[in-house]
Image (cartoon, rainbow, N blue to C red; front, side):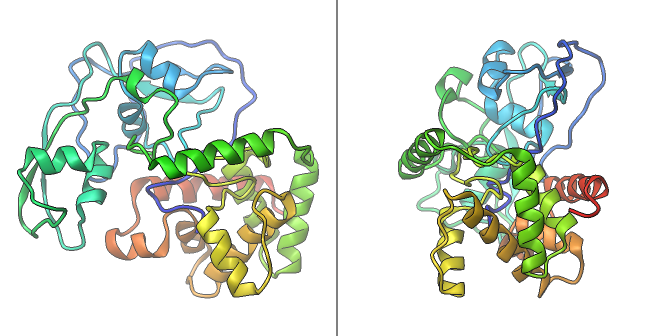
Length: 314
C-alpha cells in the first residue's frame, strides 16, 4: 500500500490565490480517538500560495500535530492554495485526555491518533514496555512540542516524528527527483490512464487517485517517504517488484505509475466495491481490519469519487 492511514497523502493543489480571511465557521473532522480542547475559539483561514503547515503553525502559535488533527489532514502534511484550514484560537494548547484501551489497540497507534509521542504516553502512565491492557484507562498528555521543534521534520498526519532512517531516505529521494526532468502533468495523466487500461484497472479510478495523491507530479515525496505520482512507499514497491518479477523504480515516473496501478488492481480483486479499493489504497487492509474505516479515509473516498466525475474517461 502507498501508506497506512498513519501515513496518508494530501489532495491536489488548488490554483487559487485568495487572501487569508478568518471566519467564525468551524471546519474539519477530528480523528476518531482525538478530543481536541482549545482555550480560544477556532478560526478558518484560506491557504495562500507558498504556505506550509510549518509556517502556519508558527504563525498561529500552535503545532503541526494540532493543525493536522483539527483538519484531519492526510499524509505528508501538504496543504493547498485556495483550501480552507481551521486554526486554533489564542492559547490553543491541548489539555490532557483519557483513552480506554480497546481490543487491537497498540501504544504506538494510540499515541499516533492523539498526536503525541508514544514514549510520552508510556511515561505519563508509568508503563513498562509497550504493552497496553484492554480496558485500562490511559492519560494522554497534551501536545507539548512547540511548532519550532517540528519545523522541517517529516511527520505523520498526527505530527509524530518519523525515524531518522526515513528522514534520510526522504531527503535523498527529494534531492534525486529535484535534479531530474519529469513529464508534464498532461503527459502524466495520459500515462496513468494508459497504464490503467493496460492492466485492467478503471482509468477514471487510477487518474483520480493520481491527481489526489500528487497532482500528477513525480517530484512529490511525502514526509514518510511515499514517492511520486502514485505516492507509493519503497516497501510497497519492493513487494510489488517481487510479486510481479520485475524491478519497479519508484523514482521513475512510469514505474511509479505502474506500481500504483498494480496495487489498485490487486485491491480490486478482493475488495467488494471501488470505495473499499480506495480505502485499502489509503488506509491499508490491516489497519481497516483492526480499526475500521477512519474518518479521514471516508473523506479520501469522497474526494476521489468527486475527482472521478471530473475524469470519467481517465
